View 1 (cartoon, rainbow, N blue to C red):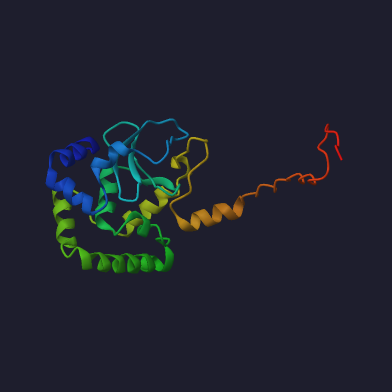
View 2 (cartoon, one colour; view 1 turned 90 degrees about the horizontal axis):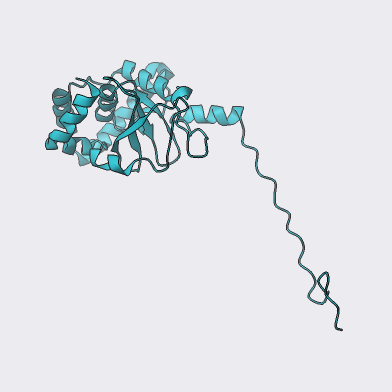
Length: 217
C-alpha cells in the first residue's frame, strides 16, 4: 500500500482515524502544521499529514509512492523517523511513543534496556487503555503494518540521527536532535558561547547636571 493510499484509507475510514488518535496520531491536526515554519536544506517539499497532543507534527518529504517521514516537536526538536509512512505508522502504533523509543540507544545492553523501558511504558498505558493490544492488532490488520522489532527500532534511531534530514527553523538553524544522547554529544562538540553581559552606563547623580545643562544652584 502506497503512502498516498494509506492516507486515503485513514481519511475515509473514521474508525481507523479515531483509533490512531488514541496513539497520538491525529490527521485532523495536520492543518495546524508545525509550531514554527521548517524546511530541509535539500529544499524538498514537506506535507503535514498529522499532529499529536503535544503540538508536534508529522510531515511527508518529497514526492513518490514511499516518502520519508519527519517529526517536528513543539520543544524545538525534530528529525527523520522512517523511510515511509507505513514504517512511521508501525512505530506510532507499536510503541508507547516516539519520545520513549528514542530514550536509550537501541544497541545498549543488546537492546534490552530500551525494550524493558518500552514494556513498562506499555503497562502504564494499559491501566488507562485496557484495549491497547486489541487496537494495535486492528490497525495493523487494516493498514498492513508490521510489528515493531529491534530492526525497526534501530532504523528509527538511525533515521533520527541523519543530519541531512534535520529540519531548519525560520532563522536557518537546525532543530535539536530527537536523540537525547546525540544532543549531549553535539553540545559538547559545539558548546554555545554565552552572550557577553551588557554594560549599563551609571545613572547620573541627581544633583549633577546632565551634559549640556547649566547648573542652577
